[in-house]
Length: 315
Image (cartoon, rainbow, N blue to C red; front, side, top):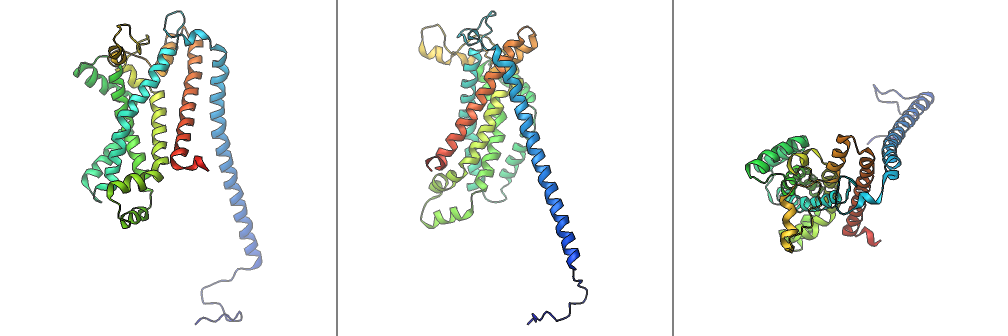
């Protein structure tokens, strides 16, 4: 048993620090702490400053150019209305999520909850998802044009753009959902199984609720990529100017599904076309404001939905 007698000599090889050395080390640690804190604050201010600068520039240059003609229901060469592109953006985003989210979430659930550890298929899927995440969007557009537009003979259509975007965001949804499921402690699963719950009930009642914020974070990132995408859509959906969401044939179902097989443009493609022409820069700046507000509204709505699903909104 070691003696606590202060008079006991120090062990061989150990050097006692003097009071001056202890104070010097303390001052050095304080300086390093202040330096790191300063760097963190500087990085935070730079990040916030860049965001505020971009948002401020878009708002200052775009808001004065907003007119009622830009929200006319029908596009003409005189009004350069963005309303058809706005409607197409919302519809294309919803259709893309309908295709990509169930596939990505279900694939992640299988990889985490059902597949055995060390499964070769899971390793291949992860490697493929990570590889696809780094491919530029224009490559997806080229693939969509060659396969959907030419090989399947869909032509420039909303459907070709939707399927291409779904393939593009699928790796992001898959990986974020997988990480969210892996972050749930194994004690949740063991407790559910111990109470007699089955695998399916455990997944939907015990695992998915705490993982939902991470899943929604991936969906929000995917929405941002869909709304801001232009390169892939130029190759697949084209740049149709008319509002094709409502036809004039008199047949409700024909008018409802007709836009899926016709060329359409989203807000990002609309803004790109206006800027590339060089004749409607003011309209392009106004479109940027609407696109920014649309992204902010979608992110705010998704964050509110995440709070509701996790129960934080009830506190």
